[in-house]
Amino acid sequence: MGTRRKLPPLTALTAFESAARLESFTKAANELGVTQAAVSRQIHLLEAYFGFALFVRGHRKVELTDKGRVLALASQDAFDIIASSVSELTTDAQDVDLTIAATVAFSHFWLLPRISEFSRNHPGINLRILTQDSFPNIESAEIDIAIRFGSGMWADGQASLLFEDEVFPVCSPSFAQSAGHISTPNDLLAHPLISYTADDPTWTGWSEWLAAFAVELPKRKSGLRCSFYTEAIYAALNGQGIALGWRRLVEDLLVQGRLIRLTNSTVQTRNAYFAIVPKRRRQTEACRLFQVWLGETAGK
Image 1 (tube, rainbow, N blue to C red):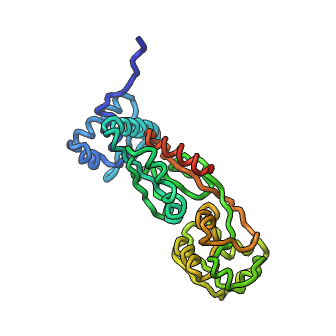
Image 2: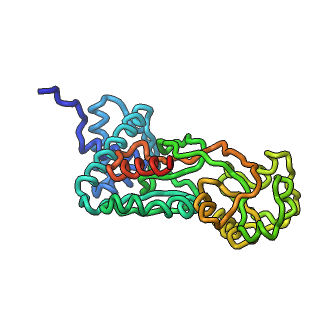
Image 3: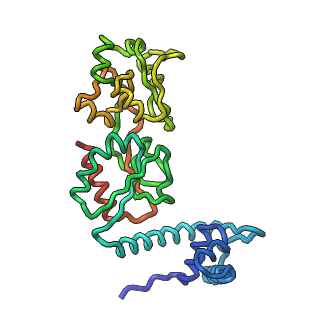
């Protein structure tokens, strides 16, 4: 028989984890449904157990000591793992929820056209797609997996590479026919260029794309300006001008012939698309299955 793990009183540890996370004995008491005095008493017991202070008590707030911060991180990780396991064990195997976060453009052009394959293979997993162009912290939000474009270095999650991308001009077949011969980046300046407002500074706009070929975008260039990349692509589909096509996002439209590529010029992106999972949360089987599907589909 193995030696029993040496653990502090779990009631006291529960009170400590809540107080450390909420940075307040009073808020911890409200969360746990006990009095503030009871929380204070449990933390005193824990400090007596360890033989050192876990909090510095102020007039209106409490702050963790250095040793208290170490214990807070460990206890929060442990409680997160327990909570995740309990949730998985008590959830009906035929009714598992999985939340995926992605940008509007990625969801619209890449994820949603393909995700039915995953649903057919795993009918017991209920998918929820959260589309927003900002990057929510996946450790605090109810997100199981996020898809982001960037360097792959994010503090709130562990990243796995999906694919890199390249950017080139696209337009509708009817626009290309009316525009005539376009073979170089400089030729594009004679036509309306559809632009969009990118919240993400790593996304390539017309100025950056043309600069890669030593072409300067005029300050007063004609062309539709959109708020989102999806709007820019739909404007191009409707023959309103030329947009920048991110190959991984518009490849279905190119295959369908609804968009065509202009010029052989292309810019390889410095960043890439990654799948991100929370670092401090135990991954469910549903999340693991979705990551496997993502990786396989991204490689096609």
